[in-house]
Amino acid sequence: MLSYIGAFALLMMMLLTTVDVIGRHFFQRPILGVFELTEFMVLILIFSFIGYAQSHKSHVSVDLFMMFFPEKARIFIELFNHMLCLLLMALITWMGIVKVKDLMEVGEMSPNLGIPNYPFAIFLVIGCAVMCIEFIRDIFHLLQSRKEQKET
Image (tube, rainbow, N blue to C red):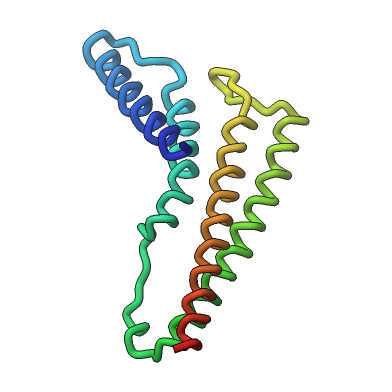
């Protein structure tokens, strides 16, 4: 579901940019606040797809030396990596919640259009929370494969 929101944000960003370019070059009338709206949509786009990319193992990874390690060492390294990433994403999620609360209390808004900033910061929290769930899922899968490896 979150990926559909991200795809919709990408579509809106493309349409808005296209209309702005046409208005700017052909009618000398750019759309006010396009830069702000694009910033918000990029934030939605990134954090809508971050968990989706993890679930499909689409993030960039470099495993140049991993093939030289035995299977047990590879599982341990991956497990350590996922646990560290889970910790970092949990901290980002927590700090994102703190930031959303601050933005709500202060009432910070975009300078030109006066759009409140906190709803878009909520996407950071949701996206990072989904990423945490994916890391937990990956950790369980690694532990399961380790258990199966011990049984054979």
